Image 1 (tube, one colour):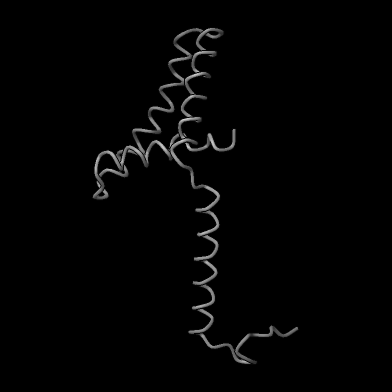
Image 2 (tube, helix red, strand yellow; image 1 turned 30 degrees about the horizontal axis):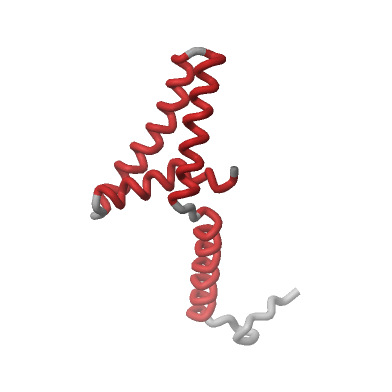
Length: 108
């Protein structure tokens, strides 16, 4: 079975590379759209973490509840540490880290 190339029987390497890169840009754009969270979504996620840490703290003990909160705080601080040296202002880096760490709240 022969593959039908858009440019004919003999594929043009440059055209194939351009198609490949355009497909990659399209795929990454779709992934970014799915994973894009705004501040409201991140606030919902943060609220869910606080509530979950409180509930776990009541039923399993305050140490375990604090551990739940500390895990998400560590994720936030790691994201903040990655974004800050990128030439961003502290407020922008904190906002990006907040959206990264808690943006999953958009699915709640």
